[in-house]
Image 1 (cartoon, rainbow, N blue to C red):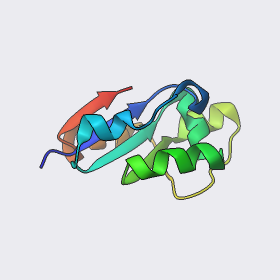
Image 2: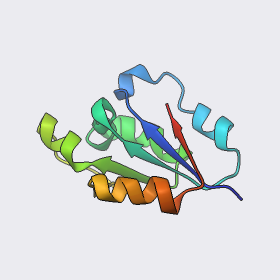
Image 3: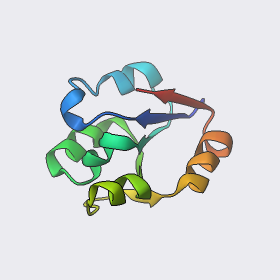
Image 4: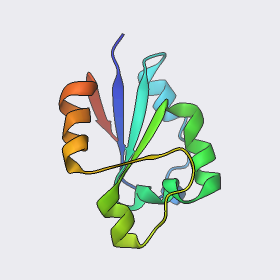
Length: 98
């Protein structure tokens, strides 16, 4: 089964329906990387709870957290650009930017 890595770029307020993650991936294993303003998912409990049913693992870019002065809350892995490249190139079969 193909694994899918979703790259989320927008703030939680800009995503009306995260169910699209399930529609795109079906039963495939899926994870999300929070980039840019999507880093707010990692610090907003309500937003994080909306995201969790749709992905198996959540990653957030350290630089995006630091640029916004945000602390991590919940079960989120903080990564750097090297790990992002590994996820895209080696660990997942497909990458989808939303």
